[in-house]
Image: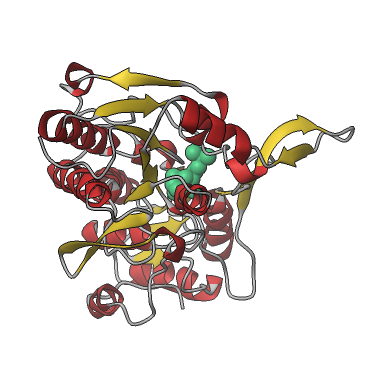
Length: 368
Ligand code: F6P
């Protein structure tokens, strides 16, 4: 057993939207902590909600055996639980009343004798973790999200699985598009970042890819469809990121979840765009929203490997006194950055990204 820097019992939580590979991290942290360092590991249920409500249970090695290939998270998750701004009641008009319940969280951390917490999540989870760290709780972060939009890391686990799922769906759309000579508009997740749409669109050979970072012109998009039709290519595959918007226009909001720290849920641009294209071009069009299917299922091998490496590194940081940092991948090497530096930020596709240039060179339109 090793020197554990005064850490005997750790908590682990998964926050925000789930994604494939979470269980690989939970397994890596738990097995390494127990087998290598003789620590106790406590699984906190449903992200920060478990800390607010004092819901957690001890994890044994057998609890994390056989979970490497499972999608989702065995701990559960929530994207409505920021302790610093937690909805505890509603006012007369049905609006939530927020309260800072961090003191309650600190009590539970002390009561359960948690010496440190591994927080697996995206920018929202890291905001909560950074806040707890400021109030004296030793935290370390592990970056997850299918959106791949966390600052300072070139990859988050879950992204490659989502790219694979979206690409497989686009390949299927391709055959039906070509049989029916239609314009197929496929909506991909990603919030304000176009990574998932860009990668799956390029992988599937989409004719048009619309991402939030490049506002599009409807006329340019319609012209691609018409031009393909004139050239005898009687179908078009159009991938649209849920956060894409026309030049001078707005994103399409699917719903506003008032109790969520990140209340806006984007979605619904595909049917809107599909109708506009059909009206403008006279070409028969159909819309598909891939939705949460992109977040589910078995992680691809690369995400299992990343999850294992990230989990191992998180523990390594904690036990070497490097608290309040996030594990990141930079230039294909594992390293770490302060939690503060990623909290509440999003990494977008830069205008000079080489994949944009490569896609344009093979004839892909970005609608600009
Ligand atoms: O951040 C991951 C993500 O799947 C986004 O791509 C999407 O906009 C959002 O979560 C959907 O959130 P919810 O699970 O609340 O529907």
